[in-house]
Image (cartoon, rainbow, N blue to C red; front, side, top):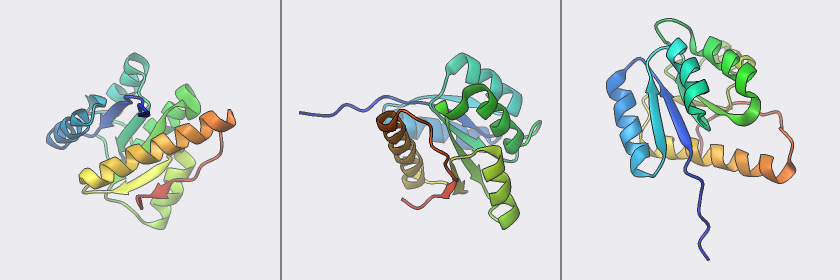
Length: 146
């Protein structure tokens, strides 16, 4: 018997459109439905319209910071969305800010296919645990370490 995984909806938020398109293409080959937003405001609109399960969120956006977007997404969607910070910043203050904003995971740029798969697998693992326990657990962002 084959276990069929859910085809997650993934929102990619990055002002680097080329990078976003390549990411969406790679994840699309895996069967995931992807949408792209290039600003924080567009990302918040897509949260409502698209209802993503996973958000790959750049910290340095042109209008809002990724932290601000994450805080608002958590306020609107709670634990129903898995937030992964994609960033080139990894100092202690940035990690503290990511935890405070509600990110589930931090991934240092540049990302590659293996890192993208780790994010999706981490999100799937969290969803399975939450489903099994029927309660939201408090998570701290992890660095990509699949």
